[in-house]
Image (cartoon, rainbow, N blue to C red; front, side):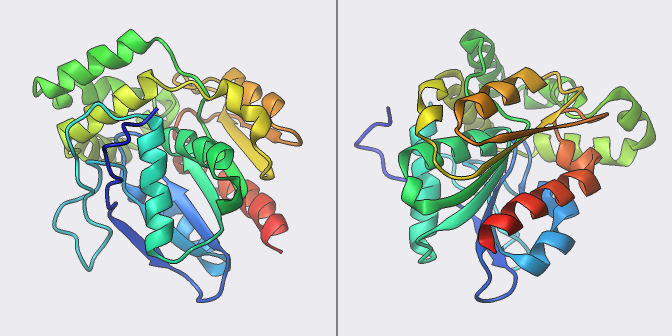
Length: 273
């Protein structure tokens, strides 16, 4: 559980899209920024008012006016409860009582927490390449310690290699270079604290309490959260549907942008009307 003495962080965020449209909150993966959703913006932005935010320590500093900027990174460790409370505080700040939510990886974990702990705030849920429980905890603790020693750049190549299939990497070296550079710019304490939140997370017992209509998307070749992780979530949430994207790894919304966008629009559009 979160420390009751710690207050939510005011997350860097941007909001765009038609006034009066249903609000769709977009949560990105660990080590990425809200630019992760750029492939989906042209389509989703026509139907929804998009609220993109940056996890603690994520984002690009100095982007005020040109993007969300960077979220603060208080000293960790963090918990999934705290990261979820950050998003609730963001909704309150913008006067949003109820929203659709879509998240990739860590963003999806936070979405699960929100749907289980604040169900009145989440109208529908889309979870991409994520998990309700992602051990071993020691691996996350070791990575957090390595990053705090100033070795984020050393971690980056191995992490990014799990985001895309070898074939995609070979065809898209510029994408890989940009993702690697973006990861290396993440605040070390923010990244490490988020690692520790994942290490301590276990949302499996909360799945049955999720009432929001839920779509789970998995990448068929995802080594970080293989499809069976998505199957666990889908089987635990009443009425949830699982879609497995062929030829995609962990960041399926980038490498299979069209297919993922279509699936999101069909699911979220049906709920929002």
